Length: 92
Image 1 (cartoon, helix red, strand yellow):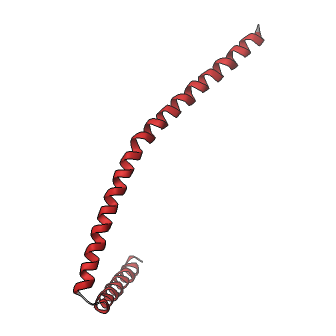
Image 2 (cartoon, rainbow, N blue to C red; image 1 turned 45 degrees about the vertical axis):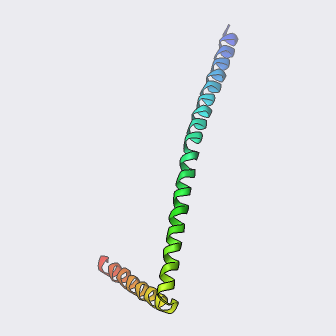
Image 3 (cartoon, helix red, strand yellow; image 1 turned 90 degrees about the vertical axis):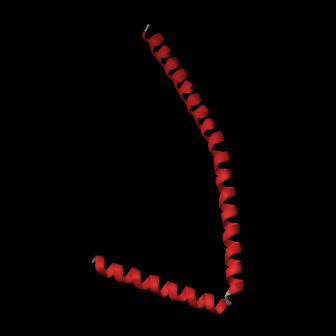
């Protein structure tokens, strides 16, 4: 009698685990099928933004010679590094 009860408990537990894992798999399938199209749309949007940014950069390079742009970026870098260092000293 006790062996039959143990066997039934084991069978019920295995059946419940199978149902649980099937439900999890179905939920994961739903999540994947709904998120992949959204990710593709986000990637397309980012690609278009990148094309626009590259076009704007090329237009800027045409208007201003490259040494002038490099000089401006180096000034920005020096200004940013100085502000980060001064903020680090102020926080201590």
